[in-house]
Length: 336
Image 1 (tube, rainbow, N blue to C red):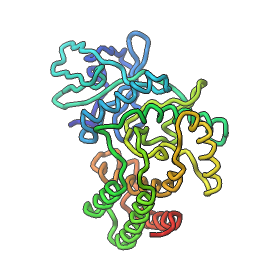
Image 2: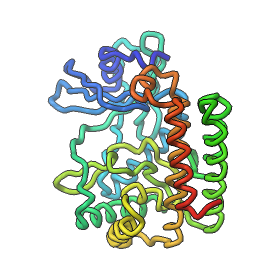
Image 3: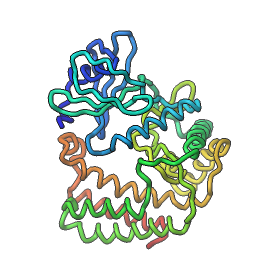
Image 4: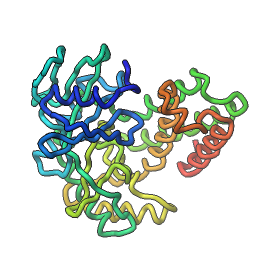
């Protein structure tokens, strides 16, 4: 698939096929995982079109993500859901629409298959997490999102499971030869100890409820508008414990993080109960994210944009730093 070489004319043709006629202005937006474009329309509006990276999600997983967004919007949770698409083919054959309503389009352009969706443009800024009132409002927002997420589970989306996710990331890095030879023994030892601590932490809190989550709820994925927080993308939506959508919003020393989490929960628990045992999963989840991030870089290394944007990945210095950080995480998790 000619994913990296997707050009503005192909983007315009793809949107034209689903009833969104552009006026010729196309702006590519920052996204490593997918190809995302802001497109101005002839009717004066603007949409954001997302072309999915091939092989990452199945059609069923994408449609389920879209369904969750529509469900949230129907419950008046401030998300920007995908638009319902129509078959407005104008000389472009092979269009297929998926979902109910149809929100995912599959189309071959110049011999290359593409899967894409579109949503209304929604501008915003990063929230000020130093403000307790902002944290409480974000907590209320996530609580509302989770109140909908608890209503039924995902059937097709990723299910967060450290017993699977951690070893899979480790195997990809080691089996693919991405860890530099000089650093491999120390990194592998630290990785194994860290994964043992992660799994032990999860095993110690068995019986936790899981729910449909945003999945990647860090400050860059929360848009702040005059009306409060919004999300515009559920690309990493998954099934997992509630704290997964909270821990990335706290930072600093343990005391500061605990206070920030308490403030978030003041808002959150107006809409959802929180199991306090999940506090013990913050550092294990941070460790798991570190490993999965390295594995993500490795899995995407064949994309020309990744070596350009992450030139440090794979170097001895990178793996030395990763080893140090894993050892620090082991200490924070209480050893292995």
